[in-house]
Amino acid sequence: MKNLIAFLTNYHHWFLFILLEIISVVLLFQYNSYQGSVWFSSANLVSGKVYEVDAGIRSFFSLTRVNEELTLRNFYLERQVAQLRRLYGDMTKDTTIMERQELEFLSRYKLIPAKIVSNTINKSDNLITINRGTSDGIERDMGVVCGNGVVGVVYMVSQHYSVVIPVLNRSSSRISCSIRHRGYFGYLRWYGGDPTIAYLEDVPRHAHFKRGDWIETSGYSNIFPHGVLVGRIETIYNSPDGLSYRLKVRLTTDFGRLRDVCVISDKDIAEHARLLEQAEDSLTMKPK
Amino acid sequence: MAVEELKRFLSFVILCFGQVLVFNHIRLFGCAMPLLCVYFAITIPRGYPKWASLLWCFTLGLAVDVFSNTPGVGTGSMTLVAMMQTYLLELFVPRDSIPNLESSISTIGITKFATMAFILVFVYCLTFYMLEMFSFFNWLQWLLNVVASTLLTFVLIMAFEYVRQA
Image 1 (cartoon, each protein chain N blue to C red):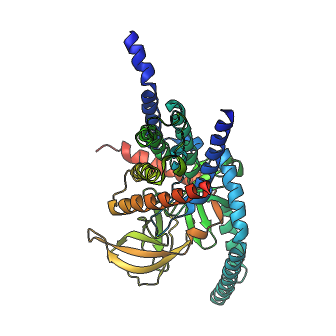
Image 2: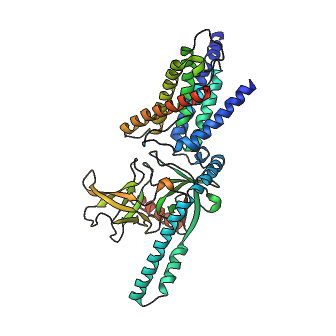
Image 3: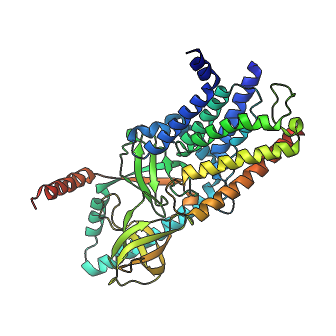
């Protein structure tokens, strides 16, 4: 007994070491499956606040560039709206229906502006933290966009902050996209490395498209509305199994300089999810 | 004693925020990231209670992890480095030196300090990237990350040490 106690007191730091290592391994493996782990992420209040101050300072220095970009984008969109309105008016001889439809479309979605407080682009599984949470009406699985295109999907929400899985997340990000004006769709993946390049997978072999075509969100998942800009086709490859095309896409969103984003809150999302669940339930219950 | 602890706490805070707000954003040539929080483990003096140094490093790793969304990665590697440091330092200091000797260029000489720092930095980078890329198949990128980060961190630590001496 004396020997045992002597042994324990002599080597107590080894036991502590093993205990601490076990804690780290548990943290490492539990993180992704455990929703309550919001406390151990950058969405907790202390780290959120620190990052917010940090992001405030950083964004101040990039204001000029952001402003320039927004002005350009605004100009481009205004021109596009004017042109479309003219074309639509020419075709239907009705100039008021356009405005009515536009309002209807926009009232389905609510945009919540948010600021990014922490962001990485150099890991294989990047995450973004934004300064809006449940108290601002943000929920899991809402889409996040910026002025230039798609950003990602909300993953974890605390009261004042949320963690977003951006396109640049190798293991978790799959966004359903389609080719503009052509309708063929696939899903967007990123394989690490260059933060401006992602790949559109599973585009069918019979699809017609060409280099330089625009890629946009398909709107199938209800996370993003149809038509949010994603990128431009740069190169066309065959998929490894040869059954579909794999498109190299240059993303329009510059993740390295991202500051201001909008979270898209879809009022029908709960209904859509419920319907999908019912459909899946009824399929599994069907006798073979 | 209390002053020493206060100093340690201050360097803890500086290294934690330095790592989170500055060094985490640096990625030279797409692979080299300075992991300077390991400097905290290197400067733990000889004869410091082992359990306390383990807890200090564990907490520093956890703090960095919480900020950078990599739970377990920094924590595990920092704890390992803390454990190694207590034994490694014994190998490098003369047996008759003062009990609470702190490892630095002036106390144990540049060759010994550099060797010790390099070993610890390498172990830290190795375990850090191993845990971070647990499911990552791209081993070439992994190797590049480990080697480049080790070199960059080592150079930065030596530079810090020189500045501290001056």
